[in-house]
Image 1 (tube, rainbow, N blue to C red):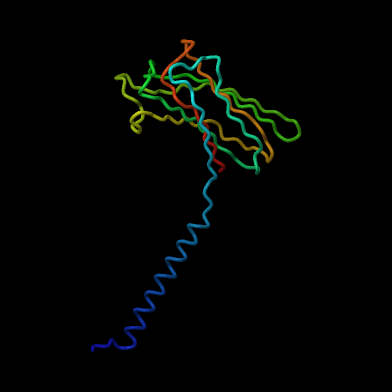
Image 2: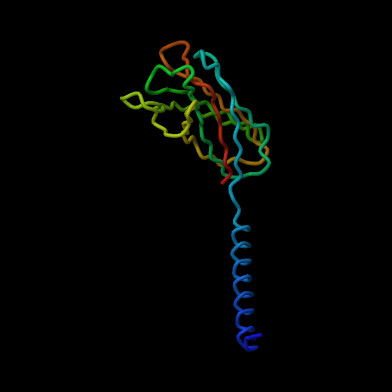
Length: 173
């Protein structure tokens, strides 16, 4: 039976322990890197007809911590009831109630291109549904803030088809 000299065995063991230590340190550093908190909330819209007077409303009960929050609007279209236009114009109204009875209201108009001039979706993911994301505001909000985000379409047609869901994605940065 061949035996390695004691010094060769010690070197191999030392290298294994060094690698294991290095790997542990990297994993600890990655584990300590805080990732932003993310939440998403979606509401279904009647895909056969979304009335322009019906706002889709998202409620924030009470923020647990003060911080900077980034909001993103998510919109899903369905191929089952095709959306008849190339883009959609939306009104997004944010109403925040801050501690001390202060209020902040922000209203924005967004236009999102859903299809190009050939009729192809401007996003490449999804088969039965296509999802579009549009960044909204980044806000510094104090703890215990409550609020709503309301979304309604501003298209000339009173009722539009093909929109299946509206969502708000919130990320604490």
